[in-house]
Image 1 (cartoon, one colour):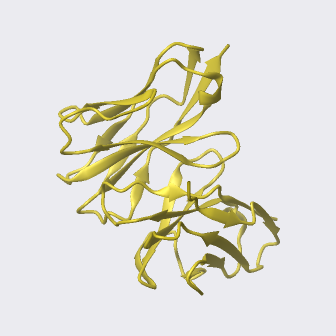
Image 2: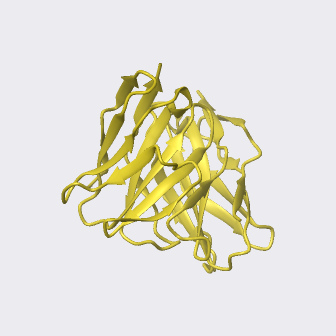
Image 3: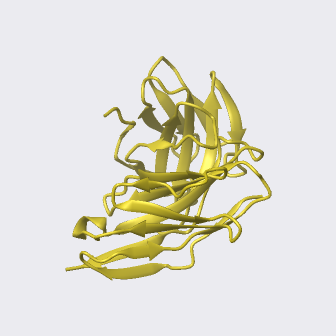
Length: 115
Length: 116
């Protein structure tokens, strides 16, 4: 069964450094998302992406965050200058349709630790 | 705005017994979907089951079923014949047409522990 893959599984970085989290969505999916989960807390929406554009973003997704689909397969989340509070599990997800009936398919996540 | 409430931070169940995980939701959107995801200790998010707001019948997927009571705005997950591998965090989530179907709203989750 096709799946969403994320790399790396764990990233440790120092405060102020830039990080890029990588995702390969399911190949026939058109809609891509990033969510984050601070340890022990709920899963929060960050951004949705379609047709090479951001279609929706949350208030969390400020100027420090950016997303890109640099080629036909990868989808990346960049945090320009990491803060301690960016420490979280980051999930990439993809879907075939932006429909309320379409489930999201999540990757295994990247655990980001900012020290 | 949409809101999902999961009132059970933790639940215990004996192996082979059934368990119900509660989920209530709030939305003014007439068109929405409700989802349950499983998150094992390894961290990945696994889609389990979906219920649409216009579905007349409760959704079922193997040992998972959804007790959907639209008037009460509840969408409880029932796991039958619990197995040790069911021990995980379970999240209820919602997507709505009016809000922007791209965005899912998640509850706080329920940690299920299956006892041998």
